[in-house]
Image 1 (tube, helix red, strand yellow):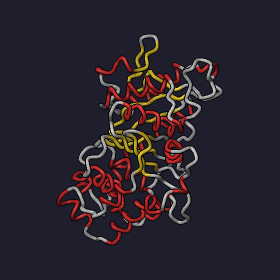
Image 2 (image 1 turned 180 degrees about the vertical axis):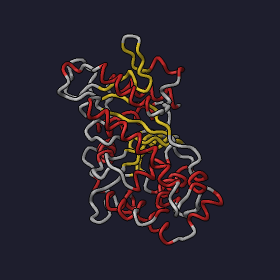
Image 3 (image 1 turned 60 degrees about the vertical axis):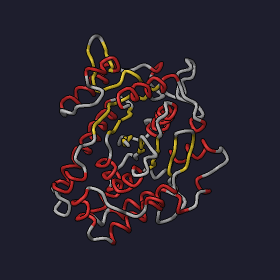
Image 4 (image 1 turned 90 degrees about the horizontal axis):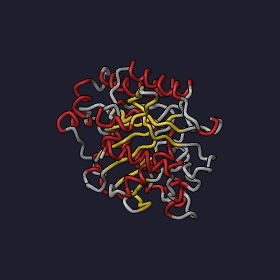
Length: 330
C-alpha cells in the first residue's frame, strides 16, 4: 500500500478536485484507492458523500464512523501508553488493537474508490481541534503511521491519497513522514511559485525537526520512517484571469530552476519520463508536468475541469494528467 500526500500552502489551486479526479482514474484502472481528508473544510469528504448520493450529507454519518473519531482514539491511545516509542523501536509497528474500528469507518464511494469521512459537525472534535490535541505529545507524530499500518494489515487498498490543507501542524507533519510520495498542484505565478518552494522546504525540514527532537530522536525516526517521502512532480492549474487559458513559459521555467537549486529529485525528473515533462523551445522543466488543468470556467474547448466534480465526471485534461501520474507510480 502506497501513500500520496496532495498539498500546497496556497488554497484555491484545485488541490481537492485534483485528488478526487486522479483517484477516480486510478480506481478505473483497477487500483483500490482510499481517500483521507485532513482539511478542516472537509471538501473531499463532501465530494465523496455526494458521489454516493447527491442528497446525502456528512451529518448523516455516525460520530464513530468518521476520521475525526479515529484521530481522537489514536491520540488517546498514544497519550495513555508511555511505551509507544519503545515498542516502535523494537518492531517498527505498534499493535493498536484498533484494526476493526479503523476499517469499520471506511465507506465505498465508487468501485475501487473508498473514503473515511471527515466531519465539521462535532464541536471540539473537528480536524483542527484534533490536530491541536496532538501537539501535547511528541509521540503523536507516529499517529498516521499507526493508522495506515492498521489499514494496510487488511490488504484492502493499493493506494491512500491524503488531501492536506494549506497549513502545518503535527497532523500534517505526521502525514509528511508517513507518506511514500507527495505531489503539488499550483497556479504558477510569482507568489504561488515561491509558495511551492516553501512547501517543499517545509517537508524536508520535518525530518530534521524530529530527527533532532530529544523525545523522538534519529534512531526512532529512521527506524519507523526509513525512507523520506519523494516529490512526484508539480502540475499547473490555471486561474480565471489568465488570458485564453495560456501558460507562462518564463514563470514555469523559473519555478523549475528554483526547485533545481534546492537539489530535490522528483520522480518526474527521471529521463524515462522526459516525454511527460514541460518543454519550451528545447528547454526542459523536468520537475513540472506538461499536462495541466485549465480553469473550470473555460468550457469552450471541452477540456475544462468538470462542472459536476462530485458526480465523477472527468475532463480530457484530468485524464491526461492522471494517466501520466499513473504511469510513473504504477
